[in-house]
Image (tube, rainbow, N blue to C red):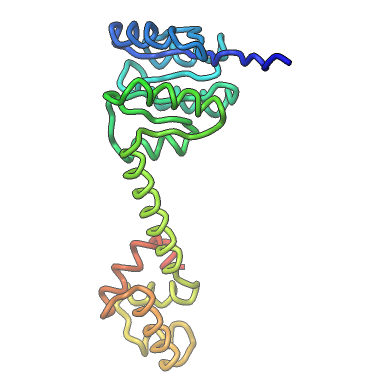
Length: 223
């Protein structure tokens, strides 16, 4: 029984450096599992290639004429059959995280081996994610740290009553004045103040107001 024959992965390259683009096409044309179907030089070309050719994978540089990130988002959001691999010299973790958030399948740094980009293309076609080793670790750590910060901020969100208390603190009111304004006992106000101090990890009323402003909008605090 003969083994199944798999069609090569169709690929388009977009980069504004002619020599680099020519080199990519020449190098990967020699791969039996890849088929180069198109080339482009800017963000507009990237969208046109995706629309007209529907390649399995499109490899895009970030530093080229036009808004590359916007073009990538158009492709990932409206042309799901085409996977996007970014091939760039931009080693910004923030940029990489943004790219992943808009649906990019691969992020490969220029200077990596040709094997890295090849693996990224194949992984993207399989529905997997790929990122330059080493750089990937930094990005993952950054994403985990951001997630932890977000979770911590959520835990610090104030209740409606706590927001009211802080709003009155911002007006410079004493515990007795706050109690009168909210029609509650001064003892209850002190109870809420203790909870606020613990939740916001602060030591006094001024710090409580400053910390609360970071996690609640002014309109929240004055409701």
